[in-house]
Length: 487
Image (cartoon, rainbow, N blue to C red):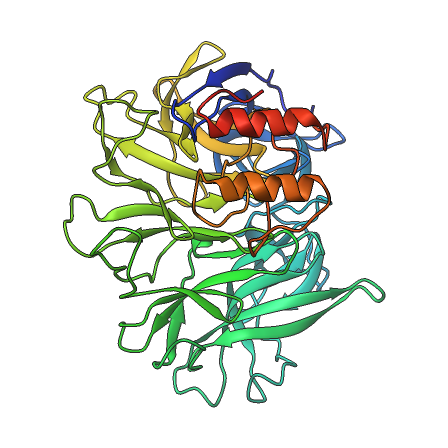
């Protein structure tokens, strides 16, 4: 490996108790820490790691990590590493004269290891100093005029926020444009760039833009969520989720493509309480269209923060969990809420343990998979970063990458591998569980029949042993259904 660190591996066998929380074997590997030597593939010394930015991981467990080093050349000491090997570096040429990379924004990686992202440039004018790249290929530079008929001609791109790619090499962009027909000078739009493999080009597809009155709304779009966690794209490219702020601020809405799935003022799963402003809500969506988000409810402010999957409350401020017996949640951080393709939800929680060294952690559904106070390679996890870009997971939910602080001040990046363990008992993803419909649907799919619920049933390999379909999957489902272990 071109960086000098020996990965530390610990295995945590975690069971939160209860019929829905089955044991997961969690292997924790330290990928990077402060002081690791970062070099090029040809062994050119770049510098020692001093801090970490965006992180991402795919189904193969391949990781992408932004690293700041203490290299003597301030123009080349920021790098992005893929699986421990230099992938991109500050001052890399863009392919337009002397224009070069000055910094990186979005960090994401698809199943093939490809990266679609927003980069910032040096040696460019203030109106051309950013652009969307696919790996190292420039796809769209700031000031380029759009070719989409959805905009009034001429409409230039004047900036880019986040980029979210999928396994088809398509990607969505939260973009700023200047459409002459819109009165403001900075107009926002959700644009999907569809990849044409035959000629290696991308075509713009505008999903929504400022000023539109979208289905399910009576007020026009005023803006969209622009933080990394306020937009998502499923790995199969069928679903793009984004958050809309409305003119007047009374109809903030979460959209999947052009369908409104959650709206401000709508009744929540908590009786008598509605959703408040959704403008900065973290959202995610999986390949079947199941979605998860964090929201604020009307009413008691001591219990108004919730983690939601579809119409099911995963966690609520003021409530407890089998994983933290005797304590109650006090908050859920500011980071993402991520749903995997099996319907499992990754989220950050903070609870009222008086021991402040062990009062925060990462959860997968109801299971605590990493907790402050856990020890990695002889060093205690002091802080888990429950913030924007603090953690990410693969679409299949088997790999989680997270930034932490070890000891008193050592920044580090950990990879969590979630092994074995049974899938969500809500096999048919209808939000009602445990019920006999889950067993009926499992047996139907097991025998080659249909699933009763839309979007679709979960993976038939219920116990995740990669042997399926086999009778152990049925035995495991029945065991978990009755409150027993995963077999």
